[in-house]
Length: 606
Image (tube, rainbow, N blue to C red; front, top):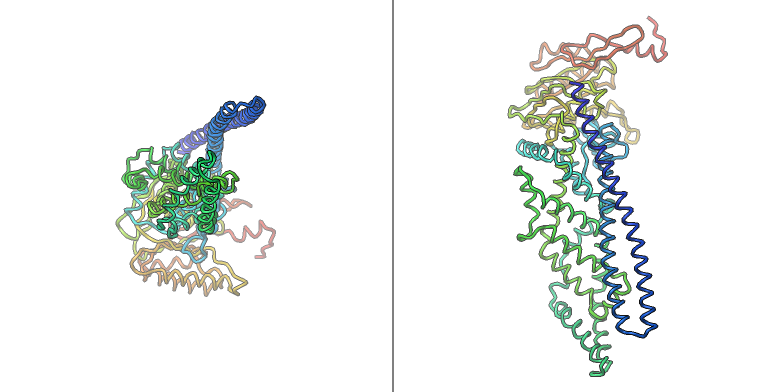
């Protein structure tokens, strides 16, 4: 089994390495092409300047006109090609980075990954104890999102269990997306082109939701049609002395007055949308990729169908907004202001933007949300592809069910991970786990909890087999003191346990994990309190795991139905303590605190 797993891991690692090198090579080629285009553009510019000078010296208007047309057309073509090459270079750089990160995940190096720390809630049922967010976390293991919507939705999926129907449809979608490595990585790379612009999405959506102002005012619509034509016509007529030159000047003054009436609005929209270009381009690229792809699962087909607006592809609608805003954002250009005075461009582009908004504002936020959903599914698909030996949980209709075959912690490296098999079910059932120090009790509880969370969001579990019913997870493991609040670790644990008791509603099965129960008090009080807690949890009908050093608690199995004893043991051979980290039925038979203290230099007197 181990040899087969190593072979699979090596194959996947080699595939990521090959892709990394290919994308790096392509990126370098495009980078070289970009430099060549930069040189060509410079040479072309110099040649055109020389052409202008020669035409001017020859005093040929035709030469100046031809040179001007040639310059504008040639420069536009070169600029467009250069931008395309630059875009391809950046895209391949991002694809290379994506594959490097996959290699880092395979080696367990998450140091450079987004920690998602802003999602941590101290009051959450399991965030802190199961390392869902933060350094070396489940979020880092899964997260392949690149938009704000994807990040927030993935955090939500990790924080709330889904119902059975939702879990099953996510599992099917994840299985389908897993092998589609090009699609998944391109979605991620396109999204990353807008990295650093996440906050700008808020400003863009805020503008979209604002009521239109000039679009509903017919005066501006009429002015945008008549004034540019009138101004142009009078300038031409005045140049041939058909009409007085004061008439076009008067129209220019009228244009400036109209522009002044929308100046504040134009500035406001400019500020709210100026940084949205990258966001829109990333969204358009992601949506276009989805539109061009075919999917088998109903869930993915439904997600794809959301990118349709009045029978028009969403990518085309988004591209139109890009075009409008790109032109409007030229307001900082001097040439724009010259033409603005003549053709009231601010009014025209504001009308176009508000027209787009009126037709599409109900869809744009839904498109962003749908992209977030796609990113969550491709994240789980990427996780599934990188760990094909992990299994999708069977969702049982029998409540209070959880069992696993060869279950391990996904954040522990394959070479170091010890897997365990367990079957623990039944309302009011409690698994008492005793064991010596460092024997693996806490790791086992986290292993069960993390795999339950992954399974309840639809992601694969680190196991050969995993089965559970719909349930909610609650943990009490890392309770610490709080000096600012003058709270001792013992009192902090009591507060957490009170939260657990309040969390049990008698309807939804609660899977709890309590580590080193009542560790902050003396042996006698700990024993009495632990027995009382176990009796109450058993009576309330929750089910779960309680770890303890108190082997005397094991006797409670004689009086409470559904309570079982399991343990982790160690062996002392000479000065060495040997752990097998294997879950065993029955109460712990070995303890090592004395030996551990001796190894630390503490003299033990018999």
